[in-house]
Length: 201
Figure (cartoon, rainbow, N blue to C red):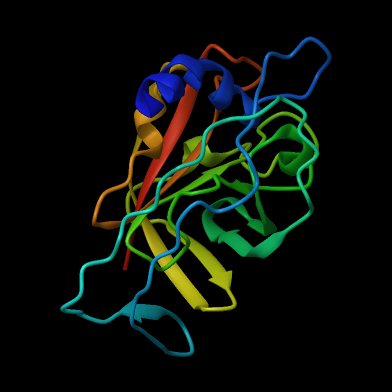
């Protein structure tokens, strides 16, 4: 039932990284985290490495979408840096237009940086400060760095896909340490989504 609800609203949810212009049909996800996980990390001056563990982490559960312009609280999680395209921005909790207008947003209920699962981040390409304007330039091996109170986590790009707006599978959680960046595609259009896949290094 829950999966069906998410699938039915996927086309609307994935519009949030596009535009907040009047008449936009974008919607949102709620602003609280549904699940947390635990991991063992060791931090160096340049990166955080996930240490082997014998315990099994409970995978996060992505939250369902509320109203398009939900008044999400301003909750900063840390920062996101994408050196290849000169991005260094605050990272916020939520993917509503209210949040994405501030900067890149973390899909509530998806993995947090450095934890098992899929860290899902949305961002604008054509409005406000356009942090994801050039994510189409990212190539395998390029770095995306998340810094949170838990440490500094360096992910590497593994690939880029163009998908339809209803491709809700991009928020699926797996036991791997991955991340996903998404935004509208092509620039200025809501016809497709560009999805950049990452792995923790």
